[in-house]
Length: 349
Image (cartoon, rainbow, N blue to C red):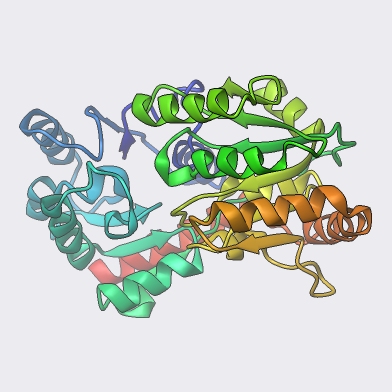
């Protein structure tokens, strides 16, 4: 069960892509997959959305396994709890509300999430970091939590075109304002930066980013491209030399592994699951640079080091190509989700 619009190609969030790939992969693996979408603006909830969700659940036959996206499940305990014994509910938590920075994630929603986590037959998370949060913050037994990291598709090595690239919905969590502030300190260096991601989710934040670009006269060097998918996104990776992930909060970071799949090094905030996504090359080399989350000055220093030091660029590129060889595909993700569904079935019996 997924949030309404998860299959809209114009809304390519990491969670939506993950849900689509897992649904398709489970079907290909022989599971009888029936996708239901929950109307509403999740995780913000209202009585109508809860009533619609309750009706969807009531229509599912007893003892069926239901994989439900945490964006829907976490704030919806009143709709889910009456079905906890009747159905085998496995919750897919992309980002627990307790770790999010969104003002819509209010106290009531977080309390609901705690109840949902407690009653679920199984839990799927997208990083080891998130698994630790559930074990430490919610006292969830480790055996109930299955890690199923996002897969990475094989991609051609990027020839590079001089761009810095940042991929993600423009919003405070993703930290594009920090990136623009950092770039403002690097006016004397040669660079161009492409911000790829939806610009309609947080208008106030986008206005702030545009204001920073205008204030520092970066309009000819920083471009807000909006949503890029398919060939346009592939071209953005091909023209880039470096991915920048300045997030304030992140449970994994699919853009990081997408960049690594193209052999691109990454400068990322050392927050949440981003270090896990960055990983290491087979020889132990880090395929990028980690900086403190929320620190624009440290991000500027890391970018300056990248831009000024050709040997560093060569070394990090080699490490990124090495890390590329270790990336798991979506088939591995699907196998891990299937394992959680099977385990949830056993626990419910």
